[in-house]
Structures are given as structure tokens and as C-alpha cells.
Length: 212
Image 1 (cartoon, rainbow, N blue to C red):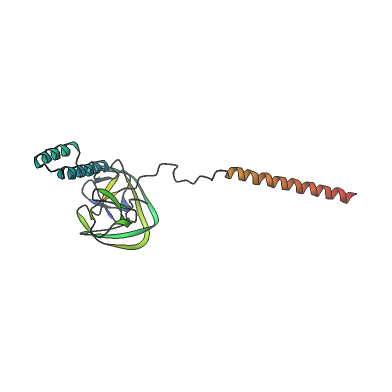
Image 2 (image 1 turned 120 degrees about the vertical axis):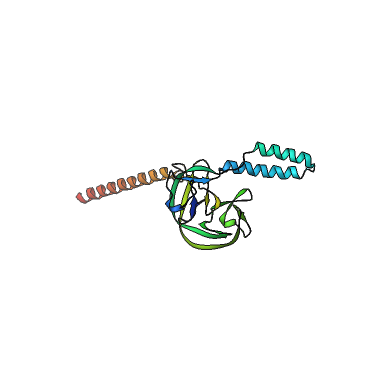
């Protein structure tokens, strides 16, 4: 599961309070950044570095100003919890940051250096929301919370910007029977019927012989 924290982890709510992930309900409002604003900010950062490497200081400042005006900076907003579910028996990891600690699934994603990075790939020194990672530790498997945030698709857990797990569309994930299974089943049924007919025919012949 992606984006799944331990039920005891705290989520930043719209009113500034903290709520345990396991206590979240559909319709709750969280305070977070929109993923599209983060993407735009990431593009701005890349273009800025290209402008800075061009050389002309006066032209650089003008171009930087233009770029900043053309891209929306990521700002905190209020977004609804669209879906919440407890997922059982998931492999988890504990990450200790400066002033923060989080337990989550291995595939939980953090915003690191303008891109998303899974918990299992995090290394000491990685920075999330201004907090450096100090250590990682495997913990006992257990429950995690599948959270989907409407529109924004992010949330802040234990002060760390995280990506949500998108809700699976209805009907997806169901196993489809292999091609040809129906035909094989029909063949088996017809074979059984043939065997029964043969057995009945043989039984009738034996009876006739016995009467003679």
C-alpha cells in the first residue's frame, strides 16, 4: 500500500489540530499542499538553476522574476478526506527525523528535494519539510491507514509532507478467470456426461445378457 501511516500517527487538520490517522473520517478537513502546486514549484526551481548558470546577473534577476510570476507557489489549503480504510498485516518501517518520528508502510512517499521518495529508499540526511532524517529502523508488521485526500492527494503526517494512496476504482483488482477456463469447464462437464452415458449403456447390456 502506498502512502499508509500507522494508525497512531498524527495528521494535520484544517483547524491546526492533530488527529490520529486511525481516527480520520470521510469528510474531515486536512491542511496540506496541492500536488500540482508542488509540481509547479519543482519546475520553477529547475528553471531557476538554469537561469543562474547562464551568467548575466541583471538578465538573471529579470528572468527569475518572470518565472516566479508564471508559476503558482505551493501554499497550504484545506482539503477533504475522500477515503479511509485500515489495511491489515503490512510491513512497516520507523523513520526518525529531527524533532519528528513516523511509522509507516515501506512504500509511504515523502516529498524530498522536489520529488516523491518511498520510505524504504530514504537515507540518513534526506530532508522532508525542513527536517533531516537521522535513522531508519524496521518494526513489527501491523495495521496501516489507507488515506485518500480529495484533489490535493497529499497530507502532512507528524509534520512531514506525504503523498496519499489513491482510491482504487471500483472493479479494479479483481482477479479475472484465465482465458479458456470456461471452455475447459464445459469440456469437463461434457466428458462426465459421456462417461455416465457409457456406464449406463454397459449396465443395460449386462442386464440383457443376464436375462438371456
